[in-house]
Length: 418
Image (cartoon, rainbow, N blue to C red; front, top):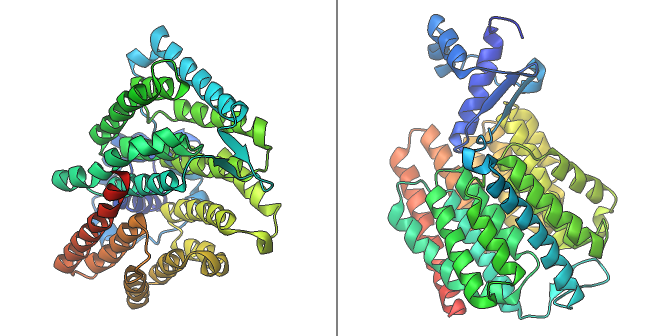
């Protein structure tokens, strides 16, 4: 790397960091393969005092970072001394063995079975699957709430605890991956105490339900012991061993494996290491004609499209992000109207059409069937648009109203669990 920064590079980095900070992400920047020292970057900006005022006025057009051979990713925390010792490494290996044993035992005992399309089912009731969806949506909503909203965190978290017992008892194949990915996202954000609270509850609950020797109880006990959950290397190992075990029973291109790739891709994206997962799903999706998609396949396609768009957006390519979204809108319209409204709003936002973006958000928020996490996502985008127009009080009201709607819709979930 050259000794000094180039001004265009600095503007590109500032745009990317601002976009990532807006969604609560830390940044690790590399230029031409070399890690950028944040202190040297700050020193350069101080020496060139005109950069920040010019940036605040909109100078320095956001361009894709790849044009400058720059990469911006979420840094993984370094391994602690406790994690490096033999006992902690033994715990990691123990967890990997437990996951393999659980997947194999579930198929061998007939608890899990496959249909002709490679979908994995359990013989327990559909109620548990509805509860798992509610748990996942609730944790996803929590991830988007700021740490200052302590009272809101507690009251929205209560349905999760009320629902988890029924979910664990049903032994749905996606339970661990679904909850684990959400917990990692909480841990990676400012909600580490909440993430550890959920893990502690799961460890004690599974022990009470299944007993000490059951693989489920061992999995959550070991997971609780790995408090460095946001370490990308460990999470990647957990994802790969679960996918491999599931693939051995259901086949490489089964829906069960594809869904697991999707979940792993999402959580690894949050940790800045997602490429092998979303590229694998893309290859699976490309091998199937869109005419044969059911709602599950469409959902997986949208998951990957979302990650691609987010990467392009974070690297400063607003216009390109809009094109990425527009390319899949036809599929979105067929299967999931909230996605259509949200992505339409993003395209309008990328095109600086503030009124069009606001209209798309408000139309989506008026949908009575809107999922819990979508309500908060759309409200957050609408609030961001309002803030950029200087309507700070209205933006705060939009976020608070969404929070109240989310909590009101959680009440039936509590009743269902009881």
